[in-house]
Length: 256
Image (cartoon, rainbow, N blue to C red):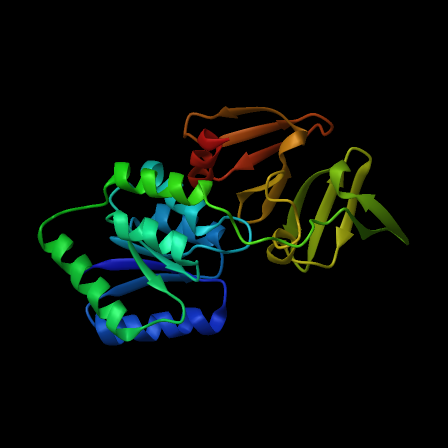
């Protein structure tokens, strides 16, 4: 049976894709339906699915970043991008051998994609790393949709105080039950905002997810090393503790 992982941050679109795939490909086993790129990367690394349907624009890790990591953590997984991109990106898809679905989803287009995936599976053909890498290069060089200005400061609780913290002074964020811990050189504070929402407002060039529950300021990293299991360990410039990098996320550091 063919297995797949779905990554789409909008719940309604994610459910629609699940339902349409179940109709178009009843034998397909959907092993995970994820709401963000970090969850998708970890699910793909764990499940090694035959196919991954990846929304290109997601908070934190984009579908492009997840796809770039697959060469290391799940090289046989075929990628289908789900996109609302303009024509310049569609042209790039058409020139490559990587499938795509455009939003809103079109059942006819989905059926054609399913047929191509099934044909490749019967032929024993997996993903083509070179073609995927070239497509990612083209899309990475293309103009992206303007973002709102990134967050500059935030307020967080520390005991009975509410602190104003400049984002550039934050070493990392770590989820903790209902809260997110904000760590600076001076200590910790608590923020009532989940990691997923923070990823939508932080500067993606500076803050990177290294685990489903951890976002690190790249400027705060002193060094990175691997343990005997291939897991990453980050040393920080202004904090004594180290941070664990989930093994699938280590592939992301190769492109930094």
